[in-house]
Image 1 (cartoon, rainbow, N blue to C red):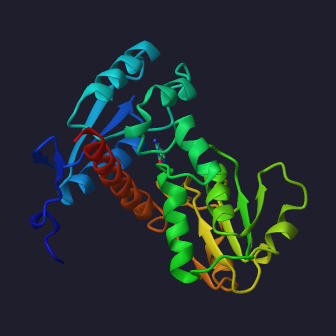
Image 2 (image 1 turned 45 degrees about the horizontal axis):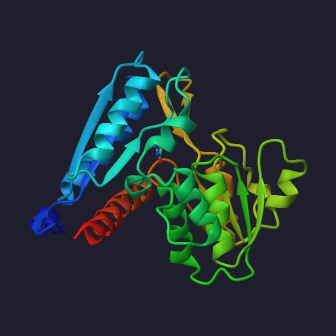
Image 3 (image 1 turned 60 degrees about the vertical axis):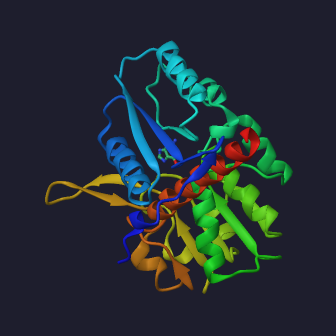
Length: 277
Ligand code: GUN
């Protein structure tokens, strides 16, 4: 494999070149979140970006977190800020997202970036749906008129996924766990994206032959022999018999999320450097 660190990426920052900088903020010690955060920062370093983690204890107050965000907003060497979710229940995630400088919002969760995405304007777009779109377009480059069904309506995946597919001229049906007749709606999908977090929800007979199936779900399921397995929303063994293309869980969408986070960080760094030169 080529040594990526040998071509270090730099942005010209008021005359002095430096690597784009990413800070991931982790509140608490959730094990899965710790692994995700490490993967993000390690990939940043591998690509020649500057990556760092800021940790706060589980009982940190919302005011503590907002103060950290204000300090990161003010740092010239940090271009991207990601607040790892989920946050502890006593912290209001929407207020926290609103505190991140929209120019550094590499998660695309600030209302300004979400609004820009819905207006079809240039935006920092949430990494997971952006990665899903890249996967879909690697199989089918023109989505005009395709029927895309999205299961899930979260701010981080379901809603921006639907907006991105709409922008590609797909006909989009947004569904969620309360949607009636969901299996027959899914059976009409040329493109099916599931982001619910309910292991094995989507069965083989929900899938239209040759459909593109993207599984964003990751649920930890206890194995009968002990230990845990990470399972997707889609019953993979059934769906793979019917679909034209399908992502596995794990190692399907996950690496694309990280790749798009790197892309967003470089995009934010270039935009900030251009603005401040
Ligand atoms: N937790 C799981 N996925 C994500 C993500 O893409 N962004 C953030 N901020 N938290 C997450």
